[in-house]
Image (tube, rainbow, N blue to C red; front, top):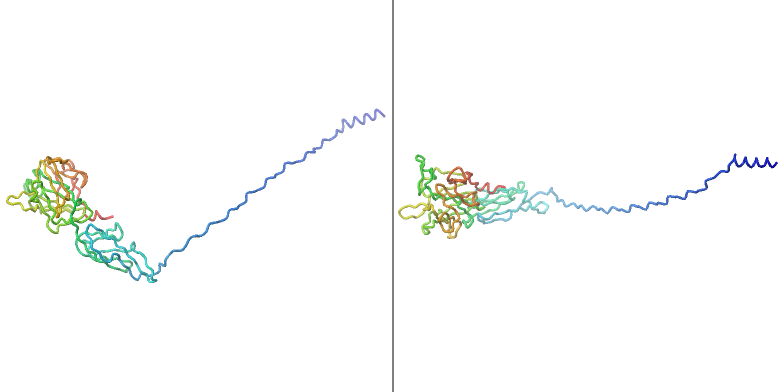
Length: 340
């Protein structure tokens, strides 16, 4: 019995070992909670308001401002147009108006600024504004402004007329120059206005009380134009766009001196009718002159109108060029000056 009991215990210990059950419990739980809530609210509001006016309203009349005006050529007149509609409303229609002048030689609309009339010459014109066939008119009277300081420059001056060729072109057979007749002074209008040269004089330093030239009454020079005054001769062969050629008009007693320019050094002064100085140029040995005297050529602006003076022969293909710039280009005239 003891042996049997032992065998039974051994059998239990060896053949049927006791099991090890897993008694662990899962304590890892997901405690996350979604706290991100959408609190955005749409605060956009429609702020558009309809400010359109009734475009179907018909224009019953227009009024041009100013209703009448007197100006000089140094003033520019700008017109505005107010429309009245059939619903009694009004509106500015200047930008849609078409402007015209009864005489474009006196006032012309170039379009640089809408409604801006450019005065060109003396006289009275009727300006018409037209908006879709509805019109209004205004009378404009223009007076040419007198030339004043800064309006003119001496663009070229030939003091030494013993040059090759014939500057005033009045001797085509021999094509030779004359010491008196072929001297010339070229003046350019550098202002933006038509100017009156009536009574303007050209004074040479040694003949202070005998002007070398006095411009006749009614002589005008438009923006971008030039005039050339010769000592004498026949100027009928000379012609250039936007250039006016004159013979020296003076009151020399006895021997005619022409422009009486001194080659080595001199001073020329251009004076207004009221005796104020418009412009001047001195050269060579004249006291305090900064411009060198020139032999066998003219003294000319190095760049049209503004850049200083030099020997013409160093600037272009010729020794002188009455009626053109030193580089051979012509004067531009008013249309080129005012066009946009």
